[in-house]
Amino acid sequence: MTPEITGRTAAEIVASVRELIERGSLRPGDALPSVRTLADGLGVNRNTAVAAYRQLTQAGLVMTLGRGGTRVADRSPVAQEGFAPDSVLRDVATGNPDPDLIPDPSTALAGAAGHRVLYGEPVIDPGLERWADAWMRADLAPADMRLTVTSGAGDAVERLLAQALVRDDGVALEDPCFLTSIHTVRVGGYRAVPVPVDDEGMTVAGLRAALAQGVRAVVSTPRAQNPTGVSLSERRARELRAVLRDHPFVLVIEDDHFSMLSRAPFRSLIGPDHRRWALVRSVSKFLGPDMCLAVTASDPDTAERLAMRLTPGTTWVSHLLQRLALALVTDPAVTAGIARAGAHYADRNRVFAELLSERGVPATAGDGLNLWVALPVPAREVSDRLMRRGWLARTGDEFSLGTVPASHRLRLTVHDLDDAEAERLAADITTAVAAAGGELRSV
Image (spheres, helix red, strand yellow):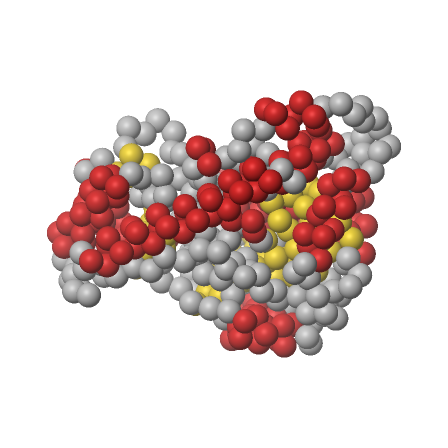
């Protein structure tokens, strides 16, 4: 037993553990004694130890991991997408869209600004609702669908989890995982249950294992998964739907973040009879990150709870922003530009993957803004060597939940490099791999 924990009541045990954490005697990831061991060591009833651990869990200080026991929660900041501040290096780790491919909203803004909105109006603007209804129904099987809007996909996922879960509930997350999803689950005090991702998406065995651990929600990216670029195959989607058929009340959240830019077909985990579900589509990737708006389609009960958390007069999404988004996505010139942007991202990623493969570092371009590159040596060694050559790259470790090896991966954002820069980066990666002792493979 950890000898420093003291107390005779649940409140005293909580205070003791909290003090140990604050002093640094207990660090993130440190294991706490089992309930039986703690109770026996302190000479208290097991119910007292259970109550203490429950209070610590609800406060977000510890987390329960099933067979992994109870551990001190990791409250350190999660890495975030975007440019690295104060760096003189060429940043190829941003995860950002190309600003030159984001449509200019100035003309559409003039037309969107005419209507005055007062308290008490619907959460979703009627015009946007009509357009989004057709957009969502083109891909969804469930007939009974409701729509609402949030301030982006991250906001939608946070609110969807909050309306359905309590602290320490399990959430199945893809591994490797989108950084915002990791952050959302950690801040909410939920228990992240990793599900490995392979070339066809979330694995069937991984989802079964997560459901066996009692997860109450599943968060999935059906296409352009970040960081891997993987999209669900039809076979895999069908198999996952079959697994979820026995768990109709587990909340399934699909984050289709790349939607209008994607080169892959939309394939869903949500079966026609699933009872708790939500499909989230943000406009950030094709209209720009500052357009903080996402449309969510969901079952009626989930939609009602989500709308209650967006009651007009408190935190509803600006109707001016909604009408601006509608004006842009219904403008033929803008939608043609979005199509060209999607083609550009796919082409630049393909070209760079070919450059690496030709130099002995096999790479394949998936869907999305980024490349997920496997290395024959630890990625940290390669990224350190790239820094000396003027590049800032992101290793796969930041995206890992622990079930898949990510230490030999780089996630690169290369679509905004010109041909000369792409050639130089590919050559520098090859040199860094060789210098770190990696074997280059001819193709």
